Image 1 (spheres, helix red, strand yellow):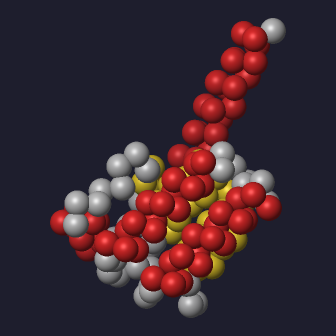
Image 2: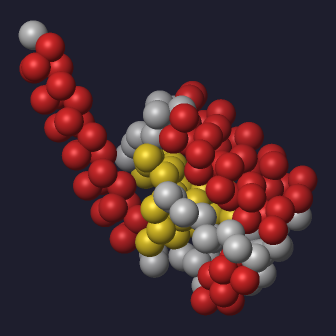
Length: 132
């Protein structure tokens, strides 16, 4: 795997990042995820970082930016599978990815996104009913 493997599960995209993600591959992954959110009308994206053993400040920035791009495109996002060493590095770099949902596994991430999507749909229906 040279950068990311992206599959669709229902209306959710799962982007599994390679164990050694270089800067160019990270940007390519970001562009592919954004493109697929639009083309496949995805409602959610899981950024699976379970294969990453190390992360630098640039990769952390790209992950955070990718999450923000996904939300701007109207989908829910979560980063899943973070290893303790990666979490420690992010905190040491001062990059905690605040405001971005995180889950321990893909299953937990899908459950979290499903709940968030249901809540957002209910809120939209409620708002539409009030506008009538």
